[in-house]
Image (cartoon, rainbow, N blue to C red; front, side):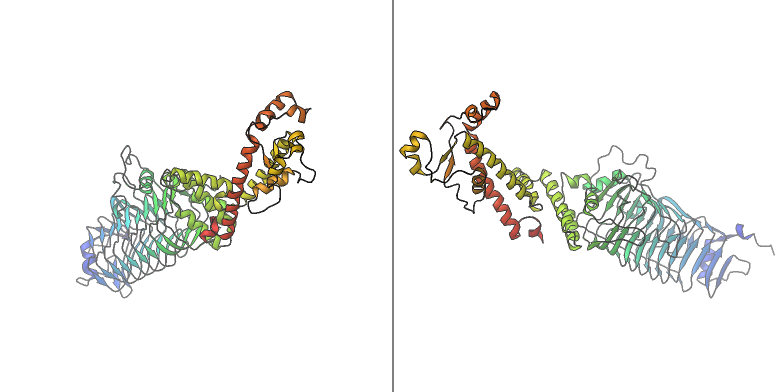
Length: 552
């Protein structure tokens, strides 16, 4: 009998492995394939031909260690206890509709199927976990779309599937994603970079699609990178269809797509590098832990170039820290986060919901000032949108100047003080130039007043600053306005040279022109109008019909 080949060079047929596992043949003692009560294992062999385990039912673990597969591994439709590849090399794994009571583990090694599926596990049912760990490499698409996984999904390897030729409608499909878990249900966590019972740092080149997935405990991205990779010739010069975030993702060549995902916690921290789009559109999160390294350069504090967010429709209950990093929750950081959205969503197609949601969360966390600042910026950006009608834009800008769009109603106090002080100065000068007259008809027709211009001694004298306040406050009667009125233009010429003998001649000419004409009477009507406007703002603010109180 020939001596067996050295274990490192042992060769075995894929068909033989299938027949041995289903019990149709027995593996000889010298065979590298071992099948016993502990399971089936193969160590250090070259598997020739396709390993076809479709529809196989095996109640013990199947483990391959240090093996090289010349053709794909197919476990589609099989019912297995557990399946593990350790430091193996294969053109890919097909696991569509596979049922596994325990775990599927890809540890080290590589699955190489450029342009195809490195791991196609759509519609799987896994009672344990799906794990890519220990610096495993997958070249091609990795899919667990529509699968039901009771435990965890751990992605700690390198995943490389560059978008080289897909159209704007194909990029979303599993074949054109580096990792695709569309519609998957994961009972515990989905982790990128976790060190719990698994090693390796995740590096993804391409798209991570987790749209419509339901992840029980949380999604954790706590290290690694998501980049476009070497994407020569990617859709250059082609018109890309779709909404702004889709166009941005395809042009970028990389994305973390959590569209409509549902999970208890999302942790985004310690990113070495990120490129492309982070989409949380329609996501429903419990809490959000975000240290900013995805969208912000930690060295400069500025937004990363080539990174954009889509936050429309995303809801969450609060910001929080994580075990691996601290989340900055101040309103300036959150506003920078919001302003990292896709550019069109901040301009031509402005979306207010992300700002409103963030403000609501900050208010619920006790930061009322921060909440108002977020809403103030929302209104400023909204009014710049071309979709806002001209009249609304004009009135909105006025409200912004007078009351900070209702979120800084104390602006009205500053305006009132300014209008009052300016009015006091104008009416003081007008009085010195003889441009204020009694409002009483009895005084105006009095012979003494008509001859001398002097008011009766018992007549209320003009106090310019009280007069300005009386005009400005529409519901308060100080007793000045009913006694005095500014003169109309041309009613009496002003003589500033006599009233102010020490001012330069050109100043006297300017004063005569202003106060002998329109200034005092125009300002009188302007101050009345401002009084009513500012009073209305104050009443609306206190009654809760303006700004942040109306949104609580």
